[in-house]
Figure (tube, rainbow, N blue to C red):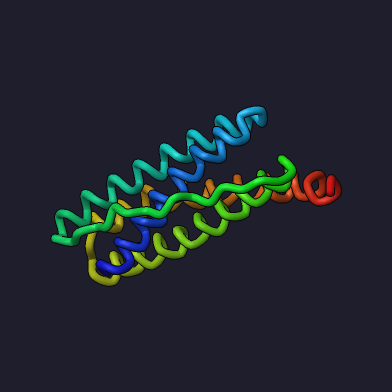
Length: 145
């Protein structure tokens, strides 16, 4: 379980930082700018709650994260690339939340189950948001080449 806690902690911290970057790079897209900031706050909260749970279990979580990639190119393609990367990251997090929830049920760990039950729905919301934006923006981005 320590490995999954570490992976999920890392997985929540990366989208938090990347969402802020997306918000800043695409500030002219008001929905992207504002929603990305809100979703980043969820990721930061999830990471903090995971760290608290891990500390209570005696698990140390690594705080080192590599810098997010930067890029050049047409604005729509950059936005699509950013959204795709975010979608993949939160999809992985969703799998980890599900694994922790199953482990919590099997071990009757009520604290861990409460944590997963509180955070996983927000991760699913982030998946839906990024997936929807990718579907909406793909035609415009891919035909603007």
